[in-house]
Image (cartoon, rainbow, N blue to C red; front, side):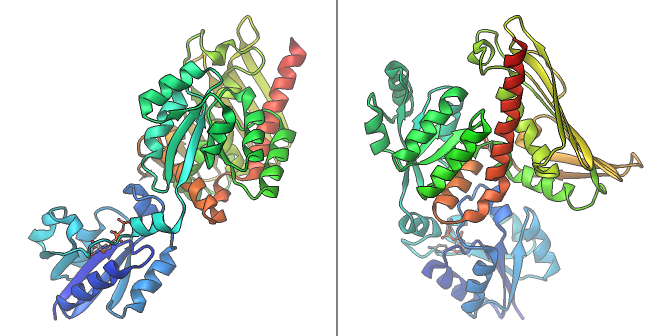
Length: 446
Ligand code: CTP
């Protein structure tokens, strides 16, 4: 009996997939088909998979060619499967010629001609309208955003707006997009507005973009006032638009894995979460000049509050701040202490104090440690009482990581609302509420 194996995502099942499975089956007597998980696809840079794993498996099953279907979830699995299932022939489409030659030592490798003019990528683009992105703001993050957006199929960065037209023009020339002096024209040319302007301008821009019927992806913090966040989400809902806060950590696969493992009971009951993020900044930068809204906590607090809210929830019992301030009253380093019914949390942020940026999750039977840059989660360790008992986990974090949030936002625009559990409306409201309290106290102290 000749045993054949093939792998694929099989998203939006099409004729190319059918023909490949048909020919793979003809290569032998028994065909095993490996269908990839969404997580594995993300890890290898394949974003935007539309169908669920179950649907993709069902579609492969319906062809009647597969004698057995397995799930492919990690790199290196192909080699293990070839041994485990006693495979004679490994086959995939000709788009992979050469890639799997390393398997030739273990079985025969056959590249089958790919069916012309059809692919899941083509169907994804055809099925959904390309979303044109317009960017407001031309700073560092906007510069990082463009190369990341080009990796997500289904979006196209078209234009930029900055009240200072000269900056917009220079940015547009650098990236080969359009710049508009007239914001109305900018809105006309955008379907999604990405807001990367200073914090204090977010509220007005979000409101205006929603009024113009545009989806909004806004950099963190969405707003520095809880009521405003509530109002904007309600408005977006009323207009049937997506409003999305861009805390990139929330959407990266490593952070999702971390939360899953932390909540699995592996360290018992979680009793403490301590998150620290420091990034030394020049004293002439906006973050350290803006007396009203600048400072470490408004700049970095969203990252540190995220794991706390995801692990302990939004209903804290007590909240306290301590800060080291410069002569203008801007916080160079802030610690936030939070008490929950069953645990304690701290968030520490610094633009003028450097510290070991760590995320530490402590439980009744062990702890999880994620070293800096934990906000781009790619590696973490689970420790127990016995110092030798350490489990290590890793996950890829590609590029600047903005691709994950862009991808999830696009899925939501295209109707997949399941993605919003990663950062809920309530999470965004709670973060804004905490920032609001912090700023109130700062004002009162002045
Ligand atoms: N395949 C094929 N002919 C096509 C498309 C895919 O023979 N026109 C083959 C691939 O070479 C692979 C299998 O079908 O062996 C599963 O491919 P998959 O990556 O799931 O499909 P694509 O359409 O190539 O997906 P994408 O556009 O997302 O890369």
